[in-house]
Length: 498
Image 1 (cartoon, rainbow, N blue to C red):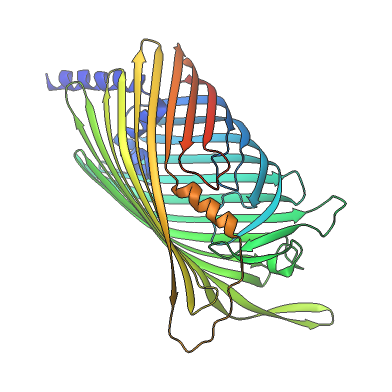
Image 2: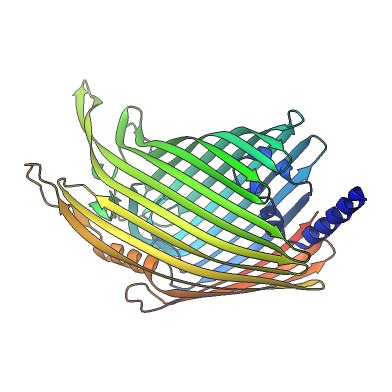
């Protein structure tokens, strides 16, 4: 009798999961979305999908380094498969982005590194992104499971107008671990190692040689404004190809599940630098902690899930003091220590509630983010900024036979303050270097301005195939520096579930 009841419950769960989109199916097992690959065997249902899509975006409600007229297209496939002793999960995606009227940051992800280089001639930029993730879980015994996970992403980024630049970025992280399970109790541990690299190479091919300026940002938009071939911008240093950046990552993670309650925490330490071949311009380091908790409760018709998350990160950047000794025409760099120039700390907290029943999915949540950044370019003077953003959102999905309707709404509001400090050291400070004040003010307004967003989507299921269309509209309030208050994004996708 107990076996029959268990079998009927399994069939009911499988039928409910079969109606879910892959994103909802993946969220059913909180181990799926972390670094603990061994935990994917906490579920028994398999699902895969593949999709091709096209997206068009227009509107000036963007930060200064983004496009107000862009499109992107690509394809993605993801899968979770379970066998008797082994489980696999992973996916591959390709995305092609084409943006008009773009200038600003020359890096693939503005703000990801503690330094930046900006150029000021609007033009077309294209970016190709290849991403792969793969997880393997295998039984090592009656209660032990081992797991391996790899995440890889490669980006090619280029601007088609002087001042031209091309970037290559590679991100890789590998995790290995094990999980012990006894009934409703499970505990896992994993070791993390990774590397992120990027290289920026600039050139100009037009007739106005030597006339383009660029800005090297050392934090809070303080830095050096000069012709792009200047030594202060590090784009044309002899013996170095472009401007290379790299960081190495090591960390660990633990996860615990007791019945319907799941929690995990991951720690990563980062060490990075800019330069190569004996030349090191910057030396930066940071720490990051990510924690999650998930509570899943079931009733006869509904599944209720509460998710909480907390992320904290701290980064510090030091600039190396270099001199060069030239002997017989060969220059040799010598380091004379380093000085702190920039630091930042950021904390993000989120809370989400999800309710799922046959044909209905409802999610509501809120997020709060706080960031503090300090420039110490002219120590003992310290220029600082504190920025905060709060966001609330709701998303509703309803199925009507072969049709699915998706509606969403969100609202965010933020603010920032600035401060100055001077430490008593007996040192005589100099003047702060150049600052892109208008650029800085526009970025702050974009990040903190009040705005509302509305989303609507419609999907038609045709057997295992589906056609999906969605549109999103955003409106910002009381904008003075951002170009336009509105932005619209429309996406059309075609996919297959298997």
